[in-house]
Each structure stands twice: as structure tokens, then as C-alpha cells.
Image 1 (cartoon, rainbow, N blue to C red):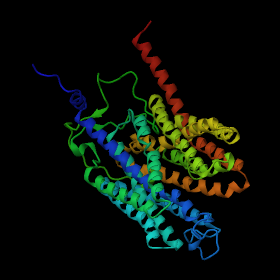
Image 2: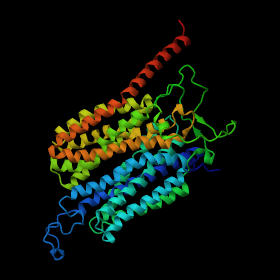
Image 3: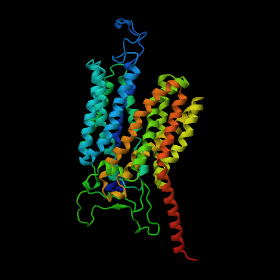
Image 4: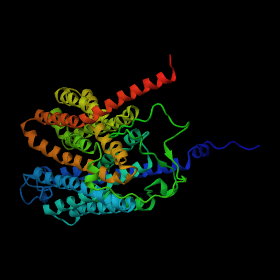
Amino acid sequence: MRSSLAPGVWLFRSFSRDAWYRGSVLFLTFIIYTCYHLSRKPLSIVKSQLHQNCTGKDEAHNHTNSSTWCSWAPFDQDNYKELLGAVDNAFLVAYAIGMFISGVFGERLPLRYYLSSGMLLSGVFTALFGLGYFWSIHALWYYVLVQIFNGLVQTTGWPSVVTCVGNWFGKGKRGLIMGIWNSHTSVGNILGSLIAGVWVGSAWGLSFLVPGAIMGGMGLVTFLFLIENPADVDCAVPQHHAGPDEEAGTSTDSVCDPGPSGETGIETSGSSKEPETPPEAISFLGALRIPGVVEFSLCLLFAKLVSYTFLYWLPLYIANVAHFSAKAAGDLSTLFDVGGIIGGILAGLISDATDGRATTCWTMLILAAPMLFLYNRVGQQGLGSSIAMLIVCGALVNGPYALITTAVSADLGTHKSLQGNAKALSTVTAIIDGTGSIGAALGPLLAGLISPTGWNNVFYMLIAADGLACLFLSRLVFKEIQSWRGLGRNQGSCLALTHPR
């Protein structure tokens, strides 16, 4: 008597070959971008060690009668905040500028080579920052220069991974898939904090060397295992284009003609079509002319301004207003990232169900404005209210940000106006995220300038930025609403034809 098939084997066989490849690419790109954020996080952890209050420490090493004798020069000066801010902005500004260039290279170079080389270089520059500790380097220009080069090579990551995921997944459930996948940002931040925290109090150089080694090692794994396109392994190619009426992430398939039964929106690789000439990479100006790219880019500028202001200033705000310890404020601030994971998944799920990327982003941003006001007014009156409002604010602020940088970028990079040329994915992603990165650099800078006048003014600035983000999406929201109304009229006409009185 033959035994039944083992449950594990049955589960293994229930997935097709294509599903296994798609799952592996999704998992690998998730780990890849987790490493990118893991390598960015150490500086925020080490800052407190570069300038600290040395009172009460071993005075045998103090020959200057200074309360900061154990700090790391040049960050032992009174203007250490400005110096640390310069190091931060060196990375952010270089990243913003480099992102516009990165997409152009990403369209013209093999993604596997481009991404793995960028990871290896990023690992080197991350490690070089930590080597400043072991080499006893105290020159500001060294740390600024390392951050500039690291910011430039880190731009290889986002356009490449979004392009790779966009190549493997069609529009059907792209919002939900990418909403879940986008949690790599928060996972990387958390892992980077934990790894850097192990050595921050002893030899802070290792807080950079270890993440740098992880980044470089993952670059080697990327070179060995990343599959850029389904066609490379004879897998089914996803259908990116919904129909001729598609506009800026909105598809309006024919209602009266649903297509043959069982259609999945997948074009098999075994098509009898003659091989076509590979499409040329799109130009920068050509990418800007794709409907929706400019609007979503400007929206992301202000959405990312709000998000990164919270990222850099939230722990200090909680410590100052709620009078928590630095560690407790830092731990509490991670709830904003938890909300961001929830918001990204919800935004993807809702936008898939409604087929309205712009409307989903616009609605969440509209709701974010009053929640930011309420959080500043009553969010610190108790631990329970603070936890709840941080999660809600994180979801509403980071949900649109996550949706625009993932599903929207992939949709626009495969827009119907490109006539099947999907080589615009990297350039479009770079333009959108590059514009958003300008906001990421501006937000913390403006918060630093405004915060001395009061935290209320910082929140007014964030609410104003949130309103501007909504404003730039208004035209696309109007078009999506119009398409829904037209869809409703088409459905009514089809029903009348199918069921005449």
C-alpha cells in the first residue's frame, strides 16, 4: 500500500515554477534594500557617542578640564549640532542629486551588475566612516566626503529593486505586494539600530564596519543570484498595461468584453510572435512627459519632507515635550515606523481594490493633516494616547510615501504611452524618488531652523507641506473620479443591453 504524499512535499508542489521564481526575487530584493537601510542607520546611533557629557568618567584621561574631553573631535565643539547636521546633509543632498543620474545609468546597464557594484561600493564607504575611529581621523572633511560618496552610490539601490520587482509583477495586485514588500525600510532601520548599538559604547567604528561588511557580502549574493527579468529563466512575463484608457496609474478595462474565461493577465513566454528589436532606453525629458510623473514627484517631495522630519526629529520632540529619557523616546519613536508598515499595506490594498492610486494617496494625506495637529496638541498627555496617535500618524504619513515610491513608480514606468517599452522603470523611479529626496533633505533642515521658535511652528510647517502634497495630486484625483463615473455609465449601458425590458 502506497503512503500518501508528505504534507511538506504536497505544499512544495502546489506552487508553480513561476511562483517559486517570483517569490525568490521578491525575497531577495527585500533583503537587498533592507541592507541599504541597515547601512544608513549607524550614524544616528553613534551621534550621541561623538559628542557626550564626560563628567564623572575616568578623570585620569582628562588633560583639558573640559566636560567633553571624551568626545570625538571635531564633534567636541559647541557647534557640534551644526557639524553633525553637515554630515547628515552631505549624504541626503548627494543622494537627492545622484538619484536623478542613477536612473539614467540603470536603464542602460544590466541591473545585476549595477546593483551589486553599488552595494559593494556602499559597503566600502560605510566601513570607511568607521575606520575613522581606528585611524584616529579628526578632520570634518573626511567624514563629509565619505558621506557624499556613500550618498551617491546608495542611489543605485531604489531604482534597481523597483525595476526588478516591476519586471516580475503585473498591475493586478502590485499595490498590495509592494505595500508588504516596502516594509524593508523599517526592518532595515531596526536591524541597523540593533547592530550599531552593540558596539556604540565601546568601539563605535565597528558600528559601521559590521554593517558595511554585511552590505558588501549581500552585494556578492546579488551578483550570484539576482534574476532581472522573467524571460531570462523562461518564466511568464506579467502584463503591465491595462488598456488604452489608462491614465497615471488608473486602468479602465472594457466592461462589456471581459475577455476569455480564465484570463490571468499573463503573457506566456512561448508566444509565436516574431522576436522584436529591444526598445531603447527613455530619456530624462521623455520620462518627465509620462502623464503623472511630475505630479507624483512633487507630491512625494512634500510627503517625504514630513516623513523624514519625523525620522530625524521625533525622538528629540518626544524627549522635550513628554520629558522621556533619550532611550525611552527613541523606543517610542519606532511606533511611527510601525504605523508606516501598516499604512503602506493598507494603501496598496485600497489602491488595488479601487484602482485609484492618486485618490488613495490624496485621501490619506488629507486625513494626516488634522491628525498631525491633534498629535501635537494632545498626543503627549498620556502614554496610551501617544502610542495610538504615533501609529495612526505613521500610517497616514508613510502610507502615501510607500505607495508612490513603489506601485505608482512601477505603474508609471510601464505606462501605456510607452507602447510596451518597460525600460523607463528605472528612470521614472529615480525621478520620483530623487524629487522626494529633495524634500527629505529640506524637512530636517527646516525643522532645525524653526524648532527654536517653538514645536508648534514645526507642526504648522508639516501640515502646510501635507496640504501642498495634496494640491499636486488634485488633477490626477479628478481624472480618476471621472474615470469611475464613466465606468459606472458603461456598466449601466452593458446591463441595459444584456437585460432589455
